[in-house]
Length: 557
Image (cartoon, rainbow, N blue to C red; front, top):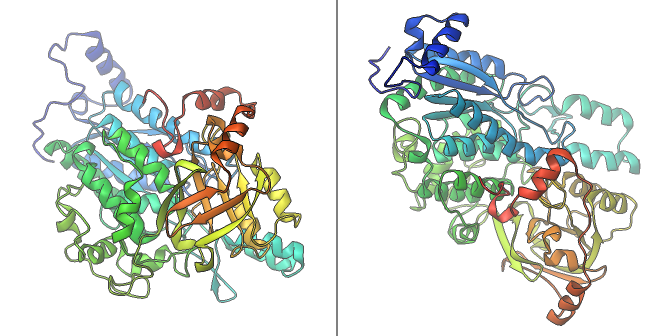
């Protein structure tokens, strides 16, 4: 145990108060003694639950974190936080759960006078929520991301959750037997952990390590592994070291760290949801992050990785190739990273990646031989999206980088799916799904089902999808989301009519509908927003949430 000299948050100059003496009384009731009460209070937030495979293994991780904290002289307290899975129910509530978790962590940290935190979580909205909370609360914090499920093999090929959508269409077409489909269902999610492709869960885990808020190697560790348990124990030790040195999240999550994250986002070909979460995280850390810089960074950052759904490799392949630090080392050859940024290791980025090398240039391309000379994500603008929209460029087939076609307009996801599966969408069309943004949903649910339906109908290389909703990291093709302003906020996407020609040029970062300004003004004068029937939390969320380009944070946060 180290010699603890810093004043703990719970300490008071005058201890003859109800706050201090009442706490003593209740802590005795918890089974602690006088020496325990004098120790720093370290919160362990765990999103463990029994309904989501991404989190069901995390009890063991919390136990290991607790051991590390105790070893270094801290007093650990475990509490739990909400988590939802897009794949298990999901829907409108998933993105709003991100901001609820941020508030839960803040409430526990502030009300209980925590001195430090270790935050344990997996999956799409949980990891960004932990980063947001760390920036807001700003006490020494280490994040432990819960790892991915290993990708199974069926008939000699990797299979994953993303194969389900296309396979449903194949069954209906008669090109896949029901028996083979059942085999897929029983094979594609074999154990605990996040989905193994470059979805939002793994995207945010990789960017957490890039930013410097998790320990080396964490992002590419399998959920079911001894090394993740060992790392969790080290996280408990490390958070006490950060507390002793007074290294807080805002010392780590700087503007330079976010630029590093965007650079690696481009190099890795991450989920478009990063363009939603990074501005939100930066906001909580007191950093202004405009998504416009994404194109600037993309223009000089080569795309080095094609993990599924963009390519044939998965997280375990990236891990064996050297992990995120190997990719960072490769990118650093171009001078594109700030190597002086502090991390939770107590060392700089440069020190962390110094001896991490690319072990497989088929998984991590060299900077001399990239998949493309520009990054994996593009931000588009035009009269359809004056404030921006995003597309995962690395998952778009070359023939769809420039596309022009008639709009097929739907005011909700369900109607679009019915039209796609009903054969009403044909090659060349641009499917427009609106009123699915943060306010309009409300909740901005992901459009994995329509993108899967488009692929399943054999239209993935000939049909574009444009929405003010968001996409799963599993989405592929010309899937353009986060259109801002959204329809519910009066954005031009709400003025698109059936048959309008939509011109998309991802190479030029533009998206426009070929409609005159005069005609758009005429339509605007006659426009009325679609009414929402949301109640409860979603109703309050719709009233408070900002636009996707601002991170869909809640006003007042």
